[in-house]
View 1 (cartoon, helix red, strand yellow):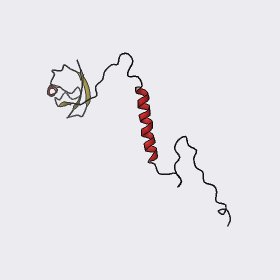
View 2: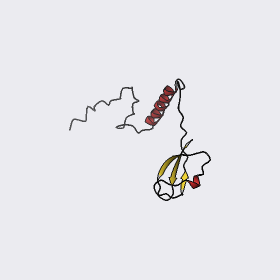
View 3: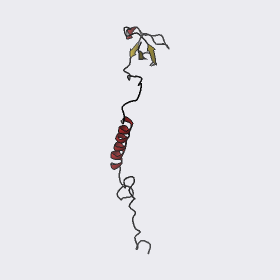
View 4: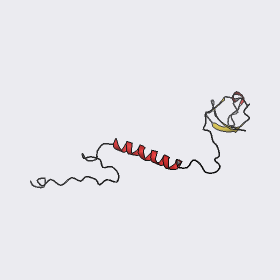
Length: 103
């Protein structure tokens, strides 16, 4: 039997029930307030993976996350008026102005 997620419309309580596929959501009562105003929520499908999953999936996900972060990094404003250095690149340092210390 599948597990369904519900939310009560009267008390806003969210709960799960293991029900037959033929059970009607209109007849489902809330375990907190016992009202029959619960509606079924759309939930994620869960399955159990047996054996090895798709090879390379973790690596593909890591590269996608890396590329996403690099795209976000490029959109940041520059630090201290200079160009923002990409990770792994040496940061550009400004040489001190020789005439700034004299007064």
